[in-house]
Image (cartoon, rainbow, N blue to C red; front, side, top):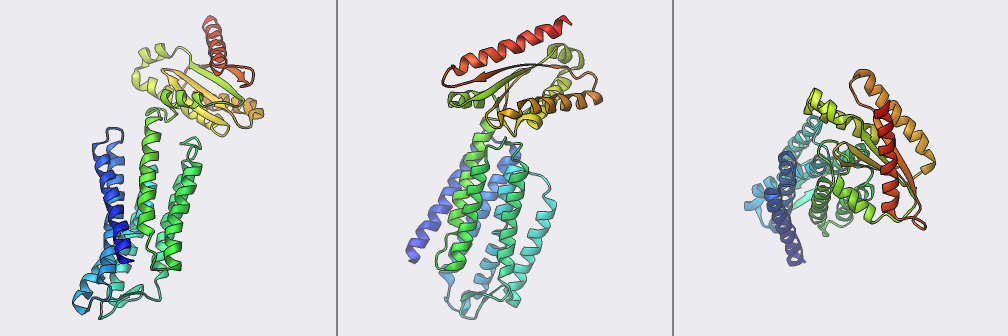
Amino acid sequence: MIGYYSAIVWMSIFAVVVIQISVGVSSTLTKDKKKVFNLLFSAIAISALCEWLGVMLQGSGGKTRIIHVIIKALELSIAPSIGFLISWVIELRRVKVPLIFLGVNAVLEILSGVFGFIYTVDSNSTYTHAKFYPIYIVAYLISIVYFIYVASRNMKRYQYNGIAFFAMMVVFMLTGIIVQLINSEIRIVYVVLSIASIMMYVFTLEMVMQTDNLTELINRRGYENYISHLDKECIILFFDIDNFKNANDKYGHTYGDSCLKKTGNALKTAYSKYGKCFRYGGDEFCVIITRNMQNVEKANEVFKATMEKMRSYDRKLPDVSVGFSHFYPENDSILTSIEEADKMMYDNKSRHKAL
């Protein structure tokens, strides 16, 4: 049993180290994202190693007791940080409160090494849970709750792409601790966390590669991938910022970028509940509505109202031309429907210029 456990632990450590090397050489991730991933994988590797060393030292005699206490204090101090680190991959903000929480937990784990209220290591170097061991369980669960909070806050940002993925992450993280609480001999917490963190890395790479850096909408690559699999009824809308080149030339590229961001935010506010929002290229955007299509008029009104509100603070903000088409997969080609929406948009743009 110990041999099997050792093999799994070292395979998990090896896997996260390999992924950590991949993070280091990645040109896709930002510097901040790399830092968080490196901290995440390091935390998992160190915690798993500490748990393994604790198992190896279990009942090994009084000479190893102090080493055993240090190892368990380190493991139980670091482990709750893993949920927070996974959360910071999604959103690296508001870290002060979690850091204070983790600091308090670390102090309690260190003090328990002396006073034995969360865990004890006896004179024979045997580790056992103490009366207040639930303090550690609560700390671990709080990190998962924080992950759920951050993930739910960012669903709109990810255009609801990650609901199933984030739900699976929560199940993974809970499964490890529940199984180990039921049977302490089945040590799978760090194996599960290793898998979850690698899944998070793959998901993050996918999102980065399909997200426009400026507007945080899905980029052209994501758009092409999405329409290639689109086989259900939908409404396609194309948007183009009127006189964008003139605004860009007159007020500068920084202002032009601001126009693109504001338009992208207005599109997400209005349409992300009903479908996907894309930056098609340049000053063109696309929205594909696949849910609650009866609400498209309502969404259009929300978009107009949002743009008007922003225009009340920024009179220079250009108007936006729109075109749409209704795609029926049994009758139409998706490309034909896209061309219809695009043509209507340019016709409306020409009318705006003529005014």
